[in-house]
Length: 387
Image (tube, rainbow, N blue to C red):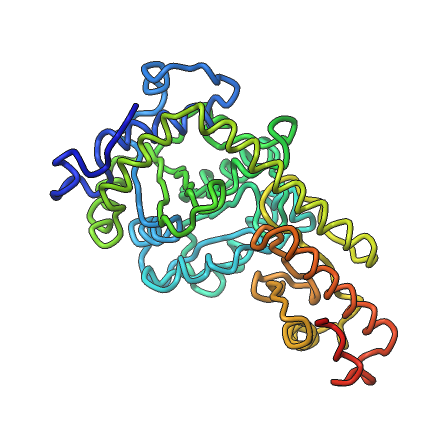
């Protein structure tokens, strides 16, 4: 399929704010092949569209925009959204800024495995004791910031719990294709887990931002079988739809299997290379971290280096790293982690050579804290971090 994004007159006028017909068909084809049936590389266009209807998918200007639209459509101001913690710091603004939702972290004994039904119920009851009505469960898989993957059983259990309370579940799979290997990673999309039977209460979010390194494109996608919800999103999307020429370019890309599969393989190879570079240095520093299987970050435990085991101690360590090494790591406090000293290192934000420099600077800071302790750290003792 060859498309000139400016040659068709359809791109110049108003149209359905969920997306043009051809790009929505291409998106349905892409989701079927890469999320629902990833093993069926030779599935035809006609066969793919038998599984996911183009009428059930939509484009929006980024995953955050679509998450906001879902919150606006499914909740009233002041209602609660449960999110397993630690979680991506941006979810707070996605849910709060316009929709006015209250985000409620769900803490669990094993965050990598996901919260149990009992832990979800505990969080919901706690929210209700504060006068909140709990309406949505928001899941990220693969997980941000942990880089781990929920088992299909865990995902099904969380959705089953939400359904027992007549809640909606949003499953954000923005890192679905950023696994460290092509096969054997253990990730299964919720589309496959539920055998494409999402019902009216499970809604799938994805975007180009991470898997295709294209956050500047501002393209997110929604797949839902709830047609009333899609009608609501269409109204809201007048403020945040994707430009028609961009949609036409995406249609060509989504259909181009000869580009998609080699690109994803190369991307995974590069992600794994940077992950291994980062974690080898953490191992050398004897800094614990959560072993990741997907995503573009590693979640590391710097708690042994804090001046005190408090949020203030975590903030002081983050400031030292920023001021002395010019490094930014996302602190756990911003991600609703209850343990001070947890930080997300986004190792794909820079090239491997820059990452190597960053990790060497971090190594120097770790060494100086252990050698000098906090009381003896000063400008003189830190002046050789950046050399």
